[in-house]
Amino acid sequence: MPTQTPGPLLTATESFPTVLWNDSSDLDELRQSISFGGVGATCNPVIAYTTLSQHPDVWEPRIRAIAEANPTWSESEIGWRAVKDLSIEAAKLLEPAFAAHKGRNGRLSVQTDPRFHRDAKHLADQAVEFSEMAPNIVVKIPATSTGIAAIEDATYRGVSVNVTVSFSVPQAVRAAEAIERGLQRRDKEGLDTSGMGPVVTIMVGRLDDWLKSVVARDGIYLDPSALEWAGIAAFKKAYGIFQERGFRSRLLSAAFRNVLQWSEFQGGDVVVSPPFKWQKIINDSDYQPVARMQVPVDPHYIEQLRRIPDFSRAYDEDGMTVDEFISFGPTAKTLRQFLDADAKLDSLVRDILIPAP
Image (tube, rainbow, N blue to C red; front, side, top):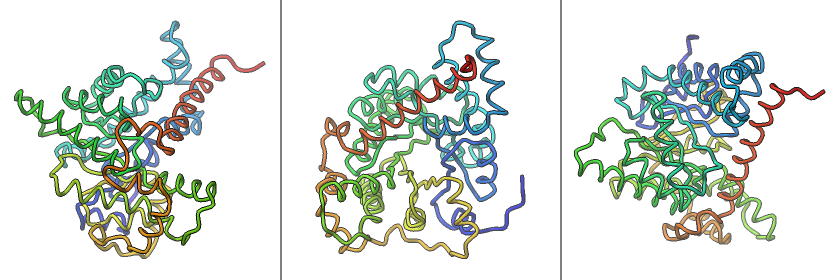
């Protein structure tokens, strides 16, 4: 592993309970992220497809070998086997952090197949399957009404869950409550929960992306600088609720768009998961981290953002019902992107096994 001069990421990791996870299971990036102080990694169908497609010298022969060993498998089964293999290898790199943090960190996220998003039992069953690939796997399940049921079931069955496709305070709180119900059921039956490490993601940058598109679509007049603070505001609001209610899951910030989505969360007992390119920008800078999680977002920005109805839906704990999660703009958009990535993975396997004439 290369020697890394301490920078803002490593300094923050040592100074605050805030921890760094890499937003990719790419092995080269993950090794460097660990040198920056990273103690975990997240992944999703888009990232998995990108990793496999960007390393054809590694993955084309491995995908052919998987197909040859399993002659009746579909393109989807072959592609997902490759994703599993990638995940197992990435999880191995995180085993030292997993042991040092007693299961709270050192975890590698694997996402359930988005094609199962309408079937809670299938999601929970797959979460159990994925959790058994390595001791330090955390499994992503979407924060939809179906996903909330799967999150409780999988947690009860011993899976450390990473809630995903989540952009709002109501989604984060309802997901944390589902995790608590699953943990309490285990506690009641005398099942161990001490080594579990659930996290609840808020995809802060994707909330910002959505609100910017709504402002453009609906012609809403507001201070444009407020639009960089919506995801931060939702994350800080949810963090206060998590702390107040003593949820055993931690918040995780994902979908990085600017350095505020790292610096504003320092000092909180949270996970921040930027892509590697942003980690390098931060670590090469002269910024000195300070604790800012408890610093509220400027009320001016909140007032401006309130002009967007979807911000209030995302910011207020009761802004949406569980049944409304699936129709929230960023939820629908992200699920469609993840489903599209699944289709691209199938196509990648097809092009390797049956090249176009």
